[in-house]
Length: 166
Image 1: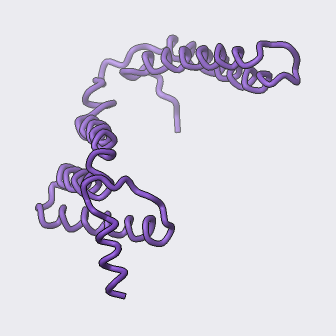
Image 2: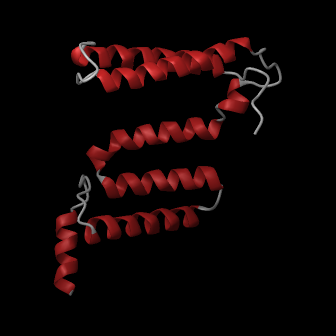
């Protein structure tokens, strides 16, 4: 893969954020114990974050030297609508998970995302969403005993009903 000869939209801002985050982490690592000795608790985190600052600075230097690409736009080429919708849906999923619980939140999320991304019919989307969540629930909740946020679905009663069947 050949590196791009032009600076893509958003590349400079991303690299500035990368340098800023690396500097913040270096400052945080220094706050662990300062720079007392090579065997101090903050020595390895400081060394690691110093390498991050140097690498991010080098990348930023290279980005600043590139000419700006004029044939690309940020919205069309870097952050198209499917990515924006997916990010928004993941944020909504995270907010709704504790209130609604794993099952309804996951089913709603998958129905909307499968419908939006595949453009298939509602029956297909509902079937894929319910089947996927049922499989995930079966594997993680029943086999591995991972606790999922319960929310509005009375999972305890449903599991007790199933256990009475067997």
